[in-house]
Image 1 (cartoon, rainbow, N blue to C red):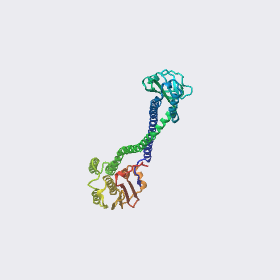
Image 2: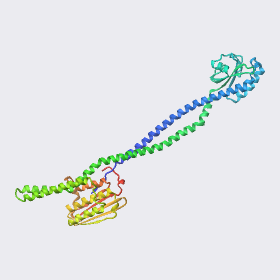
Image 3: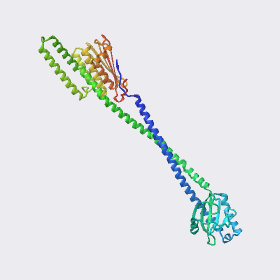
Image 4: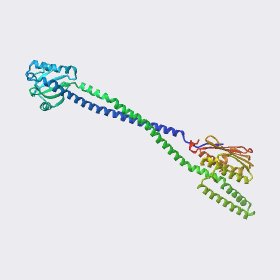
Length: 446
């Protein structure tokens, strides 16, 4: 009969993995959404900045055209409609119209009359000036508006106040298409859009592995915390089984024997050795009380007596030798066993040897301990009468908890207990316990 180990549910680990993946996925989605929003905001701000930069660049171009190209050509003859003066202005403006982005140039007097224009038929017409245009005319500044005085089409026009060669105030209007401004904005955006978007994506790619590592560590701590909680919950059950085994092997047999004697005396009547029975009963009760006291003291100290497992086993062997049972212990290297492993092996040896002395009628007992790869194995053989394993469940139901309690103790330590026996063929008990307590894996009991 083998007692299975107790362990963790594998689905719990799957739950941790799923939860970690879901957390990382949520972080990645949130990060991508934030990156997309940041990209849109950056694009909008960049578009606005580009528009302002393009408008400023166009205004500077208009100032250069008005002050450097046209101002030297603006004379009294031009104002008076001299064709030669108008031809000189046309010659100066034509390269600008060909090269772009300038698409139109006009010169207006202070009363809104068109002195010169590249638009056919516009010269001599009169258009009212806006307040901003009058201000530019007066102080020589520049103002940008949509449309032109003589052509309110969808154009962007910069009006610059200048002085002609006779110091007469004139207004030079330079026009370009808005699509040219938008193209300039798009060109500026392309210059740094790749860098900006690439930086955002790179930041997100860096954050995702860090988030995955952080989530893994958090889940690891949660799993450890859950393991400690489960261990604490099962600790009381482990201790209950241990105490049940101690009571079964020590106190219950003595009290049961006293009960049999008392029943026998009651059935026999008043005759018999009444005084001797009372003395034996009192002595048995005192022994049970002493054993209960010893058990209470045992709960507050380390179960393994002595510095290591070797001397403890030698003490058990000496007690059986005193009762006429020869015990052979074969073991080496027991000094370096982990304390928990040594304690479990000692308890198994103690309870098994007690059973041998009380029930087996054995004459020879062999205890062999061997350390393997990560596991220590103890084998206890006796040449006693043995028992029928099929009756083990019946004895457990009747209150004989020894082997079952012992199997529970070993299982709680991550090991296994196997009992092999048959009537008249002795009994073998094999105990396997991990050498490293930290390697114990708890699995769900099946």
